[in-house]
Length: 439
Ligand code: ATP
Ligand code: MG
Ligand code: MG
Ligand code: MG
Image (tube, rainbow, N blue to C red; front, side):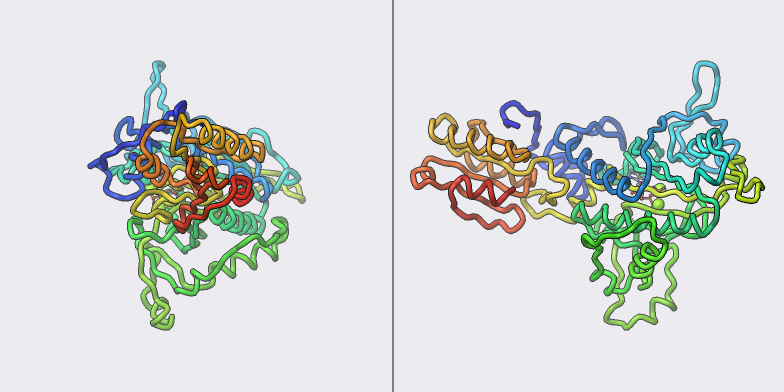
């Protein structure tokens, strides 16, 4: 992409309504624009990162054997009356009436809708196990929308639902989700720690939240510092293996890590004092096992091996896709701007032309652009006639992992400058070497 043809409305001033760094940088980098309280338009740069996050989520769901579909945002109230949650959900649910006077709602979550799909089409245990998921907009009329996309009213969520014959099978699905989430967050450059949590209006006994440690997080968390040494890495795992998934769950949940809702001071005090940590965290996902809470009242049953009808065991599993942008920035930035992890960066590198209009500099930039593109990489080429300082400030703000700086002086010696956004280190090298380093 050439910056002269792109739509990147960066702001010079720090918007006064933004209280935390991720919100400030998202506004300043022209990633989002508030449409109304807690509702945002995704401008091209923000939209690109959002799509990258979605792509990672889809890839990791596929790896775990989960199947994508798409359910609507608007739902009929009927199903929620069946499950008993229509009244229970409270004022966070946006209720709408259509012209026929039917009660509708903008889905805050989809247990009812998916259970209805399941009961309409699945009748035998032979079709199990089954896990369906989608990435779709949700609406929750949060009492205090704030921090930009971190607590929006309209937000993008990945929500998945497993259907199993037995509790044991459903707990395997739970563990499988835990494993796939660990991989998902790590690919985004995040450490998200599974913590024992409270199930809230989704219901159920077994639940873990995934938390990214950050001072601006809204949850208070308590954990054993040893847990931050754990890394999933790129180990190969058979998602069908009950033992392998169970082993990962044990490894990642056996040390003390809880949110304030489930915190147990006595248990916490059993950890050696130097390892006890109290901090704040951002909830970027949650997994639940809730058994037959929805399948029973909604009649989602299958015929078991012995011919008897039994309600299926279910769980639901959510990732805060749009919140993740904020969480990633909270975890990865400096005082100049965002530092995107490679996995989600909107462009792989920036090219800064120090002297647009200079034939040699222009040609060198074009050649770099072409060779990066030929490798499947997407550069953002600043071909505008802004002064160098402003170009650097914009590149630092939008946080691309690499910047190649091209100017007549370097070109005389056959070199360009390659700068790492994370370390700030610059090195001169021939253009081909810079391309090779990025690829
Ligand atoms: P919170 O405690 O932050 O209100 P929640 O527990 O109500 O979140 P879940 O029902 O567990 O949310 O939804 C799954 C995920 O969706 C959450 O882990 C979070 O990452 C994301 N999410 C929830 N509410 C919002 C929101 N208002 N804005 C952005 N993301 C959200
Ligand atoms: Mg909530
Ligand atoms: Mg929560
Ligand atoms: Mg939650």
